Image (cartoon, rainbow, N blue to C red):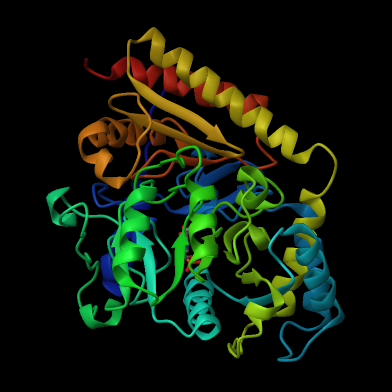
Length: 435
Ligand SMILES: Cc1ncc(COP(=O)(O)O)c(C=O)c1O
């Protein structure tokens, strides 16, 4: 199995560094431990082709949106058709009404929806809506969860060490970027995830001033962690009892782990939910969905590109394709094949891994091989160095995964041939891991 030469990417990165901070447009386009990123020339289906002519079976999925794979012809046709009719009007369209109807039909908590362009905006809008509706100020947010890079919510998404998170019962707010004001998150209470008792204690202590709990339905950012049985149900019960809202950040899980997202998958319906990524198959769109009474709490979504007809056309077509019989069964089947094959290879080489799929997302963690309960566990249970080694060696052989954590996405374009290619590469790379 040959390893790739990527000289052109290296040269292009040198040029980009003159113009872009760190040489890239978004932080994770290059991971902190890579010398340079791969420059992409084009993509089709499940595969990417770089400027040096190398092919990659791709599991990054553009960080999640590419649920239909790359350059999906039907989706491209729908967008091209809208382009000929006009790209942006700052006015409602018939297609917008159709999309609203479809979303309300698909999303369990949706009576009304509202649009923006990014997940960050949707999450900002959701917490504002919760405050407007409840008249309360504070928000509970969990460690390791990412709700975009807005100043208020970008706290304690990760930390360099476990101790930097602060005491478990009263965690600190860990800031993530220079220039971020601590005061911007004064109304955010941080807690470790998956600990219902701690949530209850905190609510008791804080009194009646908490507007909402915002949570990813399972931790997709930082290290991957599933909810303990009863945890999401417990959050639902506590928020209802205490006149608080439950917000699911479904930016990753939406339309991906099931058509109705985490609400359908876990059977827990929040008051508000946010969506982005897969909602428009690779075009920029985000959405908030919720009960009418809550959504109407006096907050107009205001943004130049809200309900943009190109993204609306893309979303309508994406949801149409995802709604066809057997689509999710096939996504799950292919993803399961990867997970089963990966577990077999790990066993062959005596490696401890935790590998599991949740719909078309699959998780790969080296370390103890046991599921995590919260971000704090990851410091003593996850072997990040081995994952980084695997990431790099797989990339050099044509399998592209997330550079920092083993969260991978399968698209409707992935097939058995991709699975075989991937498992052959895993076999080679896992065999190289020193025990
Ligand atoms: C769960 C979650 N919420 C919100 C966001 C922010 O979305 P965006 O990057 O579109 O602003 C992300 C981005 O990765 C995410 O994973």
